[in-house]
Length: 173
Image (tube, rainbow, N blue to C red):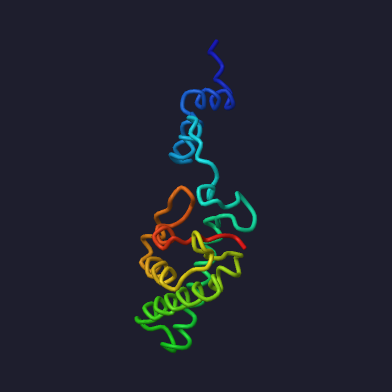
């Protein structure tokens, strides 16, 4: 008599037992911060070093809100460039949109502390010590933001390199 083949569930359990190591995969996907925290390192919460609350108004803005505000602002700038400057799509529309984005960011962050997209997502840009963003800081921040690379490099508080160099923080309202 031939032995009976194992059930599908038994095969799956045997496979998982040999191959599936979710803890190792999870630490790899979570990044070095999660692995260091598991090892006992205490980083605190984002914004703790700056004296900001952990959550609620005045806390560091989360990446999703920041990205959403950026998309709204960029869409508004493209719409302005498309409708008011180039009167349709031309190869220069994107360049004009970047110029409008620069003007929008520099002027609104200096005067009221937020762009239309930031306001829509409940965010505000403040200076590290004083709260109000000086024109030079807003100008530096906006130039670096237009270069895009500094905005893609973040520190452990979740601030982009453009915010760090301009000594500003994007917080929730």
